[in-house]
Length: 242
Image (cartoon, rainbow, N blue to C red; front, side, top):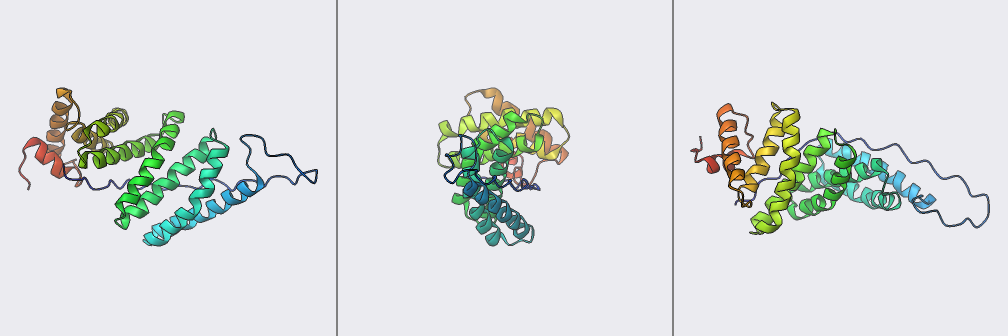
C-alpha cells in the first residue's frame, strides 16, 4: 500500500491555567514532596511549559512551523514531568496529549515524518486515557482514531500487517462510535473509511473488506470522500480516477 498522507485534524488547543506556586515551607529543610505532589521546581517548569506551548500555538497559527516546533519541544519536558508526578490529573494528561499532537502537526508540516510518527506513538496512550475518562468527548476520540490509522499505515507500509491490524481495529471501534453519533459528519465518515481501508488489508475477516468496499462506494457516489481517502477508495472499488 502506498503510504497514506498524514491526516490533518486541526483543533484549537487551550493550555491549562498556570499551576499555583507551592507555599513556602515552614521549616528550613522541608520533607520531600509526597507522591503525586509537584515540587516547586516542577511547578515552575510546568508554568514555563504553558508559556512555551502558548507561544508555539501563536507561531503555528501564523504559519511558522519551525518556531512552533521549537516551542513545543521546549514545553514537553515540563509537561511530561507533571504527568509523571500526577498521572491521575486528567487535565495535565490531556495537555500532554495535545502538546504531542501539536508537535506532530508542526513536524508534519515540515515533512519530518519520522518525528511526526514518534510524537503520534508517544501521544497515543495519553489520548487513550483521555478518551476513557471523557467518553463523550468526540473531538479527542476522533484525534485518537486518526492517530491510530496513521500508526497503522506506517506499519503497513513496512508490510507489518500483524502490527497494523490491532491499530486499525481500535480505530474502527472509535470511528464507528463517532459515525453513530453524527452520521452525516464528513470528518467522522472519512475517519471510518480510513480505518476500513487499512483494516481491509490486514484483517482475516472478509466482512471488513466488504464493509470497506460498500462504504467507499457510497462515499464516492455522494462526494463525501476526502482527498486523502479518494485514491484508496477508487482502488478498493475499482472506480476509475476522474
